[in-house]
Image (cartoon, rainbow, N blue to C red; front, side, top):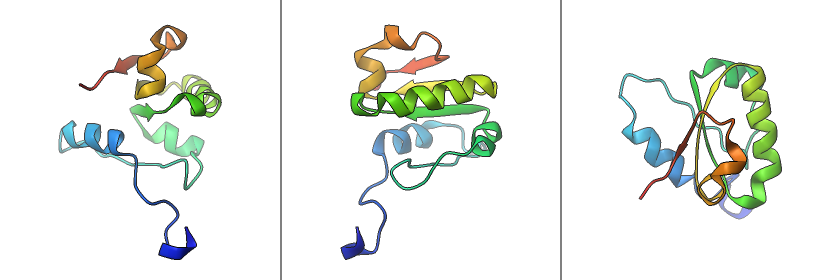
Length: 99
């Protein structure tokens, strides 16, 4: 988005909302995959990897889930992809539904 000198117009609001509900003493990092790639180092840094996605992002989400499982990082998932089809993500540790 060169016209506003930004890589994206808005950060993902769902993950920002969940992050605000976590204990204040927890360290948090937000990686917006529209802007940057997620490294194995970032996955290993996390005790829990929180993912939010829409169905159009299912292929990249599946890759991230497989990487997280291989690196033994627990996964908490939410958003339209997981809420709409939770049975396809039985290997995710927790699925959140925000209402």
